[in-house]
Length: 373
Image (tube, rainbow, N blue to C red; front, top):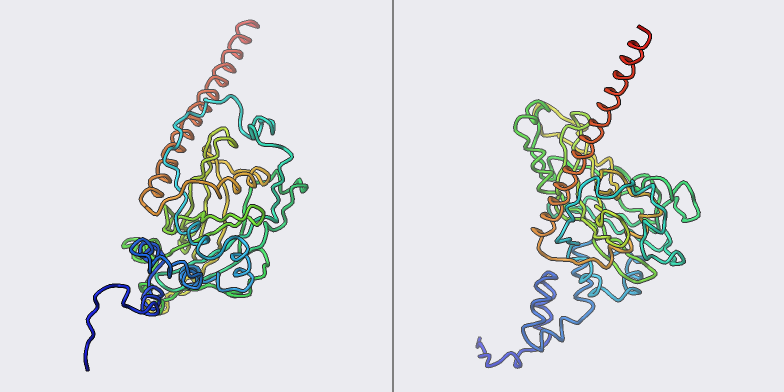
């Protein structure tokens, strides 16, 4: 057996390059395209990016999603749009009293700024592609076409807080139609009792560090897509509202300077797990995924209503993005910090007004007593 010497990259067959590149992830494939002309030519192959998307987002294997991606520019464009996460590098630090009225009391012209009222934004324009993984295992994949029970002519949707609950609506997705569960066989640490879990928090840490969520929103009309999730959990609560419940929050901060008076809106993706089976040995510990929902919140802790949410979702598709998860996390933390300060300022103001009312009432009562005495 003889080994031939290789004098240049050009002497290698292109099939060898293809075989190498089809084994790498998307980030490596994109980097390889910058290495040489041969790699660049091969990296433009749509089949390579199709395989990358299949691996990262299993829901893209569905025929209807394949057709959707092809119609919006192909798998390479889809990956470029959805792999980097939405990042907002500046969160305005303004106070609760910086504007005189609550957003919901503003007129549409004031709230939307220069938005053209004739601009058409329909709930049917949006498609949600959701994939949830625990470590390397896909535990849930769902696709939701349109926003259920929503219409811009529907007063109920327009005025109520925006919320999409994947487990509450039927869609074209038949996968994972039953319960979504995790158990010790999937890698969960055994839990012998909830009392012990409250002390060591092993199960909570495993969920917080192991769950990955992708919520891709596609606009059919403008052929744009973006990942509204943060992949990793940004915060959460354990043993709430009951001792068996664990809540994880994912999401992103969307700059909406020309839409909302507070200039930013937070996309909040919530997953709720519930412990359903614990034995003394811990070998039968089981968690059920009972809730997957997405909503939009403002800086005062309120929710964006249905009609306004359509403009926010459309704006999110053209936001700045970054592959640096640290920037995404820092953006969410800064938002939470400013939001807490605004809510605290609002509470102080309301307490002050309440004390003034009480003092005024006492003064009036004493004055009335003195008058009759």
